[in-house]
Image (cartoon, rainbow, N blue to C red; front, side, top):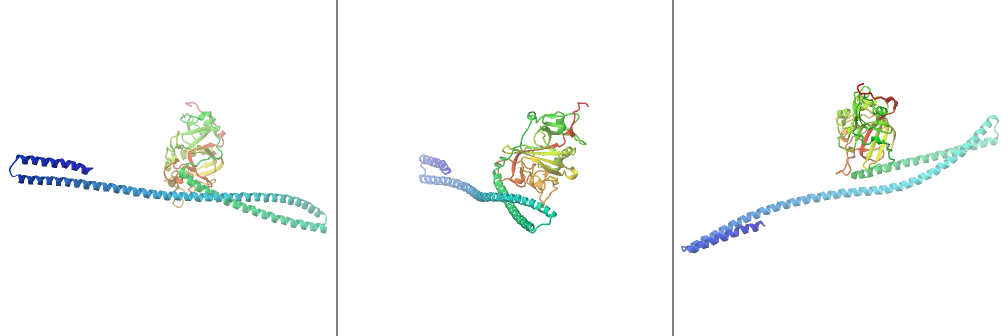
Length: 471
């Protein structure tokens, strides 16, 4: 296109110059041959100049086109390489899925065999029970005869009968031992099958977590919610009184029935605000709440000690405040969980919390719940943060790698203060850094919301009467 434009620009100039020289040659009669030669030289010079400019333009165009083609080839190479790597990853995933399917089929066969073995074991146990009953009856008869022998001297026939019964008892005892060994072998096999099933579930959950769509509590017992009607739409209510109560339960006992922010003053502590949730015929003090990931829980030791966040949204009440409440008596710790399919579960513990001198050591003992336990029981768990890790294992900083302060034991993957992860996130997820509930034997539960609350076990000790203003 550029070549055509240059030619169209040069051609008129050459023609016009030639025409002027022709006209001037007609008007001038002197030396026609000399003028004709000069005119031809001028034409050649003009044409050569035009061709030179045309060559330069063509050269620039060729260089520019060549650079563009090189860029296109480079992008095509990058695209081909990316497509090749993606194909390899897809092939690996398909191979893993095929292996898991084969493993599942084998486990199903083993499960059928286990069922058959269990039926055989049940039949043998029934036979054992029948033999035990018969043996017991014979032993009773033997006891009667022994009692009689203690009174009178036994005859030869009775002595032989006693020997026969003794041999029978020994035979039955050996038979019982054999049956018990069979039962033990069956139990060992059942445990082995259970471990294989657990491993398979972990592998399947590992693939499911790449899509984050299958993690839910579906199929388990739902948590019974008994929320009074007065609780709804009351989350932004703030209540203050001159004579602050020592606990949310004391507020409920005094007649408060609306969930919201209240000022309390535990014994021996300064007054501070807490969120009281009125439910189940009492009031619970909320010490942690997560609903949408709007608050970063990867905080420092001081932040976890003093608390952070908004009591009407996401927050951590603070270890100092929680300890000032729980040191007044015995408390229950309740954890409420919700997955991304809006299924709700809960678990409750009897617990004790130490003060700063113990690094807020936590001890738990499960009471009840609708989800398997995922926290160590009867173990002293010390609170740790990224800037103050108290449970470094093999130079592995749990809070730093799990993104959030928590009562870590052996860097387990259950951390309700971890990074908030939403489904369908781009890239492969790191389960250690997500908001999960992971029982010791079981799959991962990806969580949408969490709530941790405390409640005293002795309600009468928290009776309190609100004081009028100015008291």
